[in-house]
Length: 582
Image (cartoon, rainbow, N blue to C red):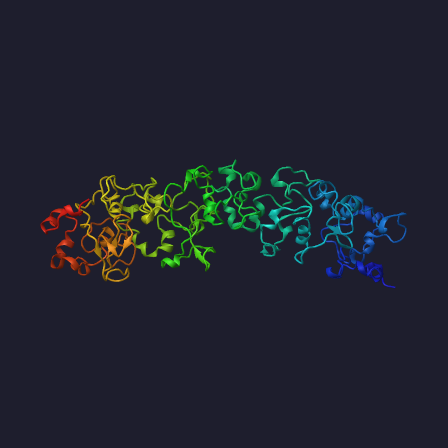
């Protein structure tokens, strides 16, 4: 006779109760011949006749008393199943289920398990668990815990919620403690991580979602790098406590992450919790706050042109180490620039991931930038490497005009080297993303006006104002000098738009490369403000390659050397009344 001490005697007859049988053949239910891990057999059940098997293992006779049981006791159980007292006798940590939303005796009293029992008949555990079989009809073959959840939380089921069919957190992916499933975040037996008593007692939304930890601690447990958002300007619990997400819940209820992310969302993307009016593009998420009339209107992006979004750097001949996003709107998916290319919304700065004050005013070294852009323009030159040589030159106002201000009223150290002239957000003019106040009186040439922002009365370079600046505004055809990387490169521009054209006018950047002090310069400048001459001064070409000879022949050298001197130009026969004065 085989011993009942390892359940083999019972299973010899009750083969359908063997928990090792595959689910397709009839799931056996509660494991037997195992040592309890977290559960403990209470003395009360042992006194009623419960027995442990060899080495203290749970066996059939731990729950069933074969001899001397009370008359009429169902299934020879050691205790009545009513109220799931037998289950909670060992699994006391699950008592918090009672009176919670998962206590179906109250929340879904007519719901029946696969044996046709309601929660009132089979006990509060019976809607999800049966000792010898599956309590629910599982819809898939994934993780058992997740499949049990989905058996209620799916279409036409008792706890249907459309969000659970939408853009939910990925399942089956690797987490710090193994595969991420529903019960990685949710404890189905405890409505609140704070309810330590037998009954779930929490009432506010944040604590009534059967979460294993408080928010945002639960999110940060896996997404620790994003945890720096706590206490920053993007933590709306601090900066906008009345602002609500798409569910109408404040950050106080959802945690810092819930202002932007909803783990069970009807919206695509990174499970957005905000209304994206146009599409799932990440810039629309940012604009959801950073626009007039919204919570971050003091940092609105409605004030003027901003850096183009959705542009492929490679299509512009640029390379970058910054993260790009997929553009699936084009026939061939490509990687393009988005707000998150330059900004990490979770990290205030590389030097200080979380600011000391969530209301701290940002600058080019902070502002959730992925790379510092002041004093070294590391962020801009990651894409625009050819312009990096402007650092430390006479066009780096950090050194030569530290008290000047751009159109956003920022000092050069606040805006960074590039920001003294270019505004990535709210530019004065779309061309070149110009970020300095333009002269009151226009010269009629847009790019000359850009230069006049500094080289004009009251400008940062007011000591270096040319007597006359513009070449006569003839329309010229550029032949043989259109290749940017070739010697003698001489671009022409449309005087109205400032765009580079094949047929147009000579403007300041036709002769000057504003980002390089001299033709032979191979490194950034040294921060010294020098007086220029005809061999440097940001000129594109050495005098021997000057393009003036194409039109002016032997007089070109004289014209080239004294271009900005009004008197010399008049003596050479160039008339200043043809648009060559500012």
